Length: 329
Ligand code: NAD
Ligand code: LMR
Image (cartoon, rainbow, N blue to C red; front, side, top):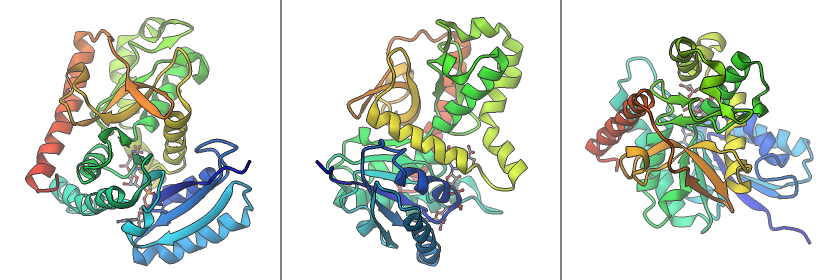
């Protein structure tokens, strides 16, 4: 029997991440090798022509699972009937822009997009926000969509999670698949806390296997947390293929489930777990099953981890207060 295609809306489709992401979605890597997809691309009017060019290339790939592509410059239309929404397009920080200006400019994008999702997305909508500042943009979109369950809005820390796996695997001399239970806590920013105290290598604590607190504090944590800036410095543009890959991983895991004995990192609406104020969209260790996520409960948090988690969560609370002050939530 032919399956009904899943509608996937991608914003910022003509951007760098969009170019790396769309071909992987269309080839079946987002949802599964047997799931047909329909793409709904949203761009600003000036970039619609470039999105049309990408759509021509998608056609030229003759992907068996791609059942259609529609391009929009209107959010209400783009999210109509969407089952999955990848919110990639955002306003980048430009010279002279203060943090408040950036939050305000993005509020002007993510507020209306949240409203459009509220108005017309499918009942099973799942939203991943990639555009920065991702956690707070997700909060703005979520607060603008009061009829959609809050747990359907998530922000991406899977790239940070994957970066942490890569760094740890090199240090420990193991493959990334030997590492389980990596966690990124908090904000997708330089304050994030990549936690290896709960990670395991061959069933043992990764922190004990490595046994090097100096490396942990002065190498691992800053390398992972500042990797985005290092890539911008080296490439002259922010990470794109690795960000697209992480977005594919995030949604694939959300829909298809985490493996037994493992978990992933997703920024999700806090229920107050681990002292993270309720309502903030913060990264946690989560398991997924049947298209739903659950925060892993009962982990012991030592003093070192407590301080790091508190610092990144405080930053999220400050961002929330700033957008509240601006009337964006
Ligand atoms: P880009 O500038 O190449 O592309 C962004 C695209 O978004 C552009 O084509 C632009 O026209 C479009 N856009 C802007 N406003 C829009 C709107 N209102 N509706 C629809 N489209 C709109 O940027 P990129 O490299 O693709 O990165 C996109 C975002 O992802 C940036 O905010 C970047 O900082 C962020 N990012 C996040 C992570 C993460 O891990 N969460 C990682 C890398 C990049
Ligand atoms: C990344 O982590 O690579 C990006 O979020 C960096 C950025 O500022 O776009």
